[in-house]
Image (tube, rainbow, N blue to C red; front, side):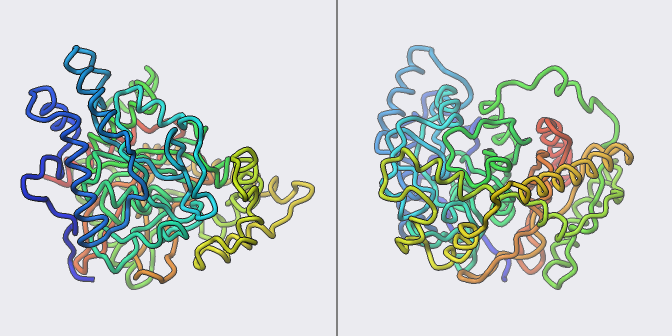
Length: 467
């Protein structure tokens, strides 16, 4: 890989490229831009770079009422009825998140006609905060993979290298954010689906604590592990979006970590040892060393984990088939189960084998699932004990150990399972490219409910990296 640059550059007179939510809000407040201008600006960028030019293929569907929604927000602003920091801001949503009036397909040709009657909870919350639903982003089919290929949309391309994968399954959201196709986006994360593409496309991505945000209205992969989370070009924008999703932090969370040096534990087992992995690991360790030079205490965490243990604690296979059937039961579609989808030869060939494997898994007495739950709890206990015994604020390791592969090749999943099986929050921080051009994310993981702490730690880290 050569050292890359963003494929979707600014258009002539581009009013939205690379601009933060605060900049957009200031322009609307000053009257130099309107919400309708923002929608038109993003639509022009999508037409130029997603459907033409590099043909990134990150946006699956556009909201035909987006300009009407923008006009309504502009009218509210003129009346002095601004709803908040998202007022008039266009947002994209991963297409496994229900949006009333639009298809929600999970990237599956079999679900192409699925039209949910109401918004998912996260969509409702952001609409109430003033956001405009601009459209839906591509994803790996049924969220079952990390290269972002599907029977409905085909392949999505990396925002920096059109020959490489963007990561997944929220790859469309990550590419769209990096390419300024919207101010920000919402993805879902079961075992790395926000954080992997965030790293590969150099954006910020947050997986919340399990249960912190409702997944009502999200096509399920694993109800135990599924989360929804924000993706943005800057930490400030991510924090604004997170606050709109959840409301203000409670007093206890706001008071946490009031001062002193940040105490960060590294997980050596999650720093890779292969050729490309060593390059990524070296880049991540160099970033941590810069933080340490500015006062952070970086030390190895006393935690012995390996990939096999994490894989054995992944409950997805025991939940997906039945959860999907429940979702499809009243959808009014010809398919009502994973078996129906497979029998209709609907899935993309690169997805079909995993879907067949998950359809075949049987656990009649529930003992297999219970055993996995036990392993999940054991690993969670080990992680929390390591944080406590080391007096650590958080853990740090690469979001993904290696490089994004060429289109059509299998991608190694990286380190997403640790936060997933423990139910703990994790933030992927974009830390640039290695000398050969590999995009790297640094993942920060904290105790349950510590999302705001992770954001503050990342703010300090960003300041140190800039210095």
